Amino acid sequence: MIELLGESREELRARCAELGEPAYRGDQIYRALYAEKNLDLSSISTLPAAFREKLAQSAAITLPVVKHKYQSQDGSVRYLFGLSAQDAEVSGNARPVRPASVEAVFMPSENRQTICISTQAGCAVDCQFCMTAQLGLIRNLTPGEILAQVLLPLREHGDQLTPQTNVVLMGQGEPLLNYDNVMAAMRILLDPAGIGLAPKHVTLSTSGIVPGIEKLAKEHVRPKLAISLNASNDQQRDALMPINKKYPLRKLLAACKEFPRSSREYVTFEYVLLGGVNDTEEDARRVARLLSALGRVKVNLIPWNPGSLPYREPDERSIERFHKILMEKEIPAFTRYSRGRDVMAACGQLALNEVRDNPLAVIA
Image 1 (tube, rainbow, N blue to C red):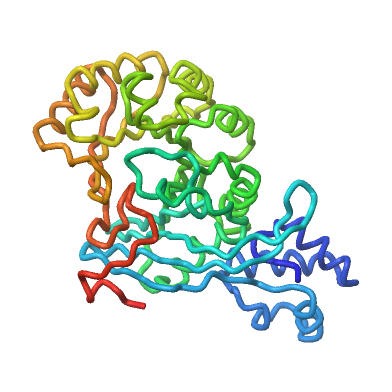
Image 2: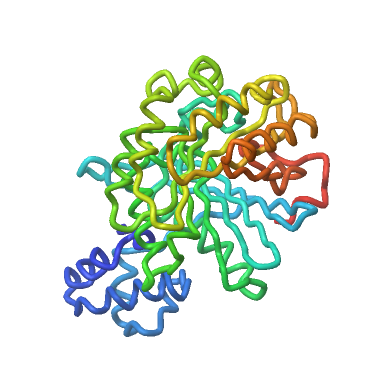
């Protein structure tokens, strides 16, 4: 069966032509799936009933199964999605991909909603402070599986949405190690005729895959770039983020310096503060020195979120001190306290954990 969700306008037009239909039928399917969020093939009323029946014999819209939803006290919802096995195109050959589970988080606020999505089931990068790393890499997600994590929460919460939707690729996985599928999804997400989000409202976070950053820089339409930094020197980053041994700070920061930015665009650096590990005054000064020559950058300081790993949260004094030093060195800095910590939905907590100690948290 052909999987329609995740296909581009051009691919859908070609599918329709192959079935003996006018190519513009592909435009109608594209609009229905992405602009209208109509994910039921049988109810796309712009298509003739006879064509819908013919299409259903060779194509499908496969959606993740919502295995659980966990409701945080702050209004955030962690989705645990079950993904089915399906054929994926890999190096020109179709082969089945394994069923898996993956997580996304819907975070409403007064003026916007933010959806944190995953790009891989599990992760191979092995950041020592992140619980997802304990899963290892299970498999890459397809474009349709990536987009479904946006479409399903938007459809479910449609009666309470604000005009602005932000999407952050900061869930499970390293986006730049699933580059082709991620960018196929991003082109649909950012297409005004597709899901229609503005590039300034979509952020891709990477642990520092330098070739991927360089490739992303050449894309005509792309999300904003965020770098998961989390250390102030190579020795420290080697220990916390083993990917640094392959792409050390010198190479990573050079790629960031060359990354194109609009007049109002920044490269964001995320810095998880680990109590007693990377949160000292000297760490803050080193971070300021690292970033001072890179042009428009900003730093999001993220206090570590508790989990089953041997780290501790930083105290308020060290957070404030770190923040103050960056600002004094003219590095824009913001302290971001994660949403959904009580249901294991915060940064670094996504590891398919069930919430057992709070029965009110499970809503599906």
